[in-house]
Length: 302
Ligand SMILES: Cc1cc2nc3c(=O)[nH]c(=O)nc-3n(C[C@H](O)[C@H](O)[C@H](O)COP(=O)(O)OP(=O)(O)OC[C@H]3O[C@@H](n4cnc5c(N)ncnc54)[C@H](O)[C@@H]3O)c2cc1C
Image 1 (cartoon, rainbow, N blue to C red):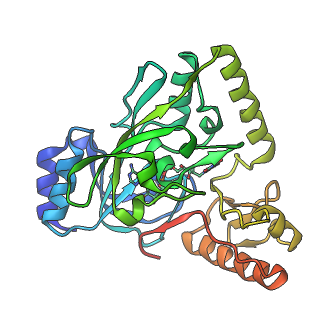
Image 2: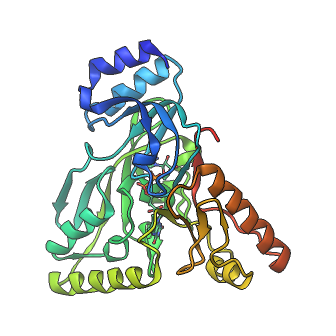
């Protein structure tokens, strides 16, 4: 661990915003992953300086939102993990738009919008990620995706400059944006919503919540759908038809409730999950000549 980086970060951040040897299993919905050398939770006013320090010392930076689409390796993450999370959660309503900081959870933003009589975020209300992570992934569900409502974002680019980009500039497509390729850090964004009765919005959110509870294995740690939807197929159905319901490696298993989810039954390691994912890909390929592509992002050392 680089003590100079630690000392410099300590000049920017309070003690409770700066951790060392932080277990990443505390910060991922899969509940797996080794330690991050350094883990920071900056405020919007501090994040550019944090990145500047890391850059100056050549320290590797990993951005993490709510960790709901991440598989962190058992050997952890070297360098600095920057959590765009609980210290960047400001939301403001301006007319029919929502101005939202990247660490805001989609659930919280959807609730603010609903209570203000603004519709458009209902689809996202049950996705357990932050706004930043949702833009990166162009998260979507029940016929909606971030692309439909995003106007613009403010990002920190790889030179450390704040830039405003339109949604079009992010090349959003199915579970993809160019943010990771461009090494942008999402700071905030603007969503275009439309007026509707709060009760109607809340009722639809409740309907979607009930659907998730019924269909998804929310009682187990997971990262949601493990694979992207292959063109013309459903990953879960292919996995089920291949006879892999309940198939497991250690405590990593294909959910019996929804075969598209790999779940952690208790003490799974990242290595177990990787091995299971590889076996699923191999078996589905052999049986159906369809190549499954993981939606879950691997980070750190395995
Ligand atoms: C039970 C469950 C259900 C789910 N259902 C859905 C669903 O219906 N639809 C769907 O699309 N997804 C779903 N997901 C997956 C996940 O919630 C989404 O992909 C979500 O958008 C990820 O957000 P996050 O904040 O957790 O991002 P993380 O998992 O922390 O990060 C995801 C990626 O984004 C990067 N990143 C995060 N924040 C930033 C930032 N501010 N700037 C730059 N890069 C950043 C990370 O480096 C990483 O590459 C589900 C997950 C679970 C566990």
